[in-house]
Length: 179
Image (cartoon, rainbow, N blue to C red):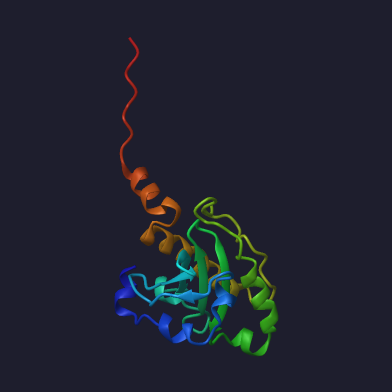
């Protein structure tokens, strides 16, 4: 997250461009963008549902064009991704070769996943099928969604993610030796 300190938090700019229901179904409003990483709390009435964030505000992942690929993500308080939408990119393959609808379909494949309950295994294939012809771009998008969801969950203690990480760092007590 050290890269984030030098990077401007752009979430407020993108929140104005998308209806809340597109990113966080069931929410009727967002709280103000705040925190590090910056998120906006999603609410249904007075009940807090989760957080909305911009992937590029959380992880410094660059696309094939060397520019950020910006995806707004809705992360429920149980760690499940409830919405995701590509809001800005400068990827040449998507601009000229791959239909936007295919990229949108790929991104929607992450909706419903919970990286707190089921963390990705190192070296495992992505949880969503890659579209031929846009492999690098889609792997970057998938990686940024995955890593940012885990980072936001840890930073805000989503579904105990912060405490789970802290507990893993606590050394286990050795079992008594048998005599």
